[in-house]
Length: 163
Image 1 (spheres, rainbow, N blue to C red):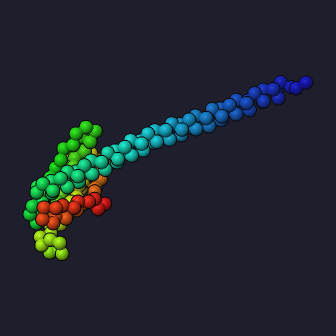
Image 2 (cartoon, rainbow, N blue to C red):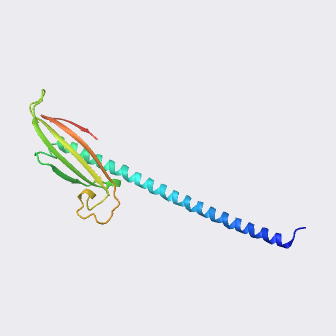
Image 3 (cartoon, rainbow, N blue to C red):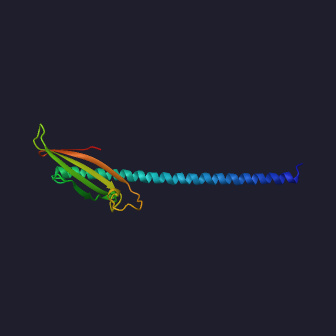
């Protein structure tokens, strides 16, 4: 037969063990919730990066079209154009910069012009961080840059994305 002193002592140990287990399980649950939230944030950021890249590529394709139509950059000075995109890309501000170099003489054509295009897309409506005059307050943004070039040989154009 056990003494009442030992029974009371054993009950105290099991209470301490139960409190310890509850504390450990609560800490594990909090860590799991934090990881779940972090994974959701990463997925949202990944989707924003994909959309920014698509918006920048749409800007570059628009630049190719403008160059082929004789628009975009017709002088040696850089031409900057802002584009507005529809649908899910509407929140992204796209800035297209085009610079023309030439004329060069090629074996196949006497007047060859090289058009360098750069398209920058970011999810800030007031301006991309590179263009913000006062960046004192941190702003969460996503930015994508794609570049391309067009070679104009007479009326024929060869355009491609370079990066």
